[in-house]
Image 1 (cartoon, rainbow, N blue to C red):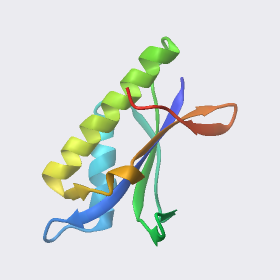
Image 2 (cartoon, rainbow, N blue to C red):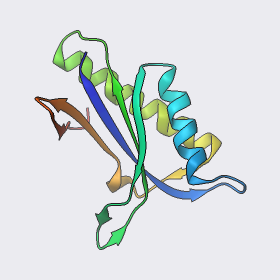
Image 3 (cartoon, rainbow, N blue to C red):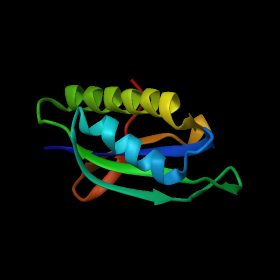
Image 4 (cartoon, rainbow, N blue to C red):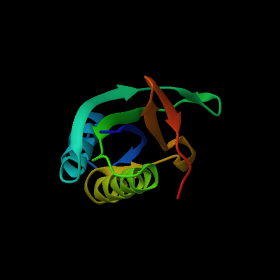
Length: 112
């Protein structure tokens, strides 16, 4: 099973929501599609400032590389849509990242 990571920048949250809610809701939405392997928070430097991001690693059923990447892209879209309807916005968009694990290294996959 190929492994992917989605990195979701935590933008403005709805009243009463916290970054922890972002991670939990993202895992909930992703779990309806794929096995969630791990969830975490990171704060990389992007465009000169730290951006908090929820990071979820997940497995996609093995088929063909193109179909696996398409399934991962679909999962990313579903999670973003769920988060924006439940806890707040995912921004900046430039900080959204989807990567695929190959030989122990995760490399970005291009948008489809």
